[in-house]
Length: 572
Image 1 (cartoon, rainbow, N blue to C red):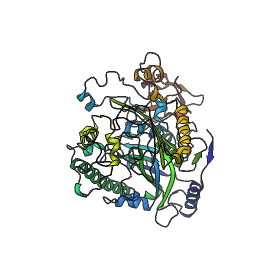
Image 2: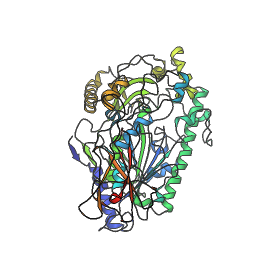
Image 3: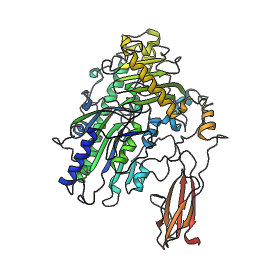
Image 4: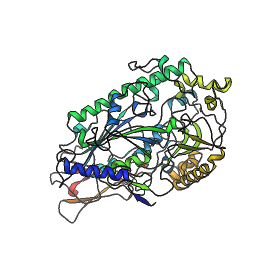
């Protein structure tokens, strides 16, 4: 795939950072211009939330901390998830690959939904458990950061549709924090806030402090105006207000440590709102996410502070962009394209300016939808037309408003914008204009003035499906596993064990795994006890202290079973 050098906007950012090198020694670059201090990077990831916040014009509840972040950073108006549900979307975030390419498009592929099994014990009878399988050269991107000296932490959700290698995180737990790094070590820290998750609108969930009352929430025209709908909306907005306070706490931690102006802060949601016709739906309500990036020295008055960016970006771009911010050039074979940092580029192929998404199996219920957006227009293709827009998902039904929407199939819509909930089938194709029709209810597929656009977007979607070898079309999933994920007998392969070899230079060693796709981690011990984070083997000779007696090696090809081996140093 050809790539074009960065846009003028990105070039301005590179120039701006260069100015900081000259103007703020000891600030962003603590060691001055001769030895640049790498940028720290923090992800503030929230769940199940559309851009229903102040920076995007929604003032239903105050979001002062996000407002500040936007005033000191760049707000992206066209950021999209690759799937409208968390686990497939997160597999794209961590790998930079489309989930339809690596077999992670079904929610979930590793474990059944308890709610689905409670409703139907045979729900997963024909659905196997398996892991996604990226190409052998793909790594979870934090592994590259760790190899470059970054301290990488995740607090704490993963949900990648595969077990990640031990080389990915220094620490991944509810206590993981950048504060525990070594002195002056750059860091990449992920903080996941679950307070806006769909489940926080369940009646059994503890309520956050009330900022807006049910009678005061705006009711989108796609929903009937019922007490259940208003209660779910009020819970959603009150959870957003609580999340905003959490954002403020994370920012203050950086300020108190004197690190805010050495750190890029990236705020986003893992997909759209957790209410029906948001999550699990290939509309803007399920795929469009907030994205705010605050660069170092993001005070009002600087060139980037308070600006907006209309570039279309996708979750596959996030990992490559973090690598680029850290000065690491991402592999050009990745589906994602860096839009931040020194390696920022734009594609010159069909993906330029477009975000692609899929919807397949959600727990035990199946649909098959593919969609592409250029930021304004969304073209959607429904391969299963014999299912309603609101598939019968047991987990979602724990939100009482879901049944109010089901009733519209029998009573008919209360207003024209609700026709999708009343429909028992879907059209094969749809085109929506999110600018004039933000709730995407006016299907323009037959509009004469849009036929050229529709033809072009059809070709773009076809090109994406062909390019990625879309594994969502390989059904049943037993065939997917046997033919593509774990070919042959459909059993998960085991990664070959790692071997230790002395180098020609005294005191230096190499680690080798027969599977070149394996990540290799190791830990050293003087007394036989192995503790602490696994180190990343970088496929170059490394030194072992003569006092070290044993080495623990774990090899792990993503999608295969890991293997752990312990070796004596020097053959003792």
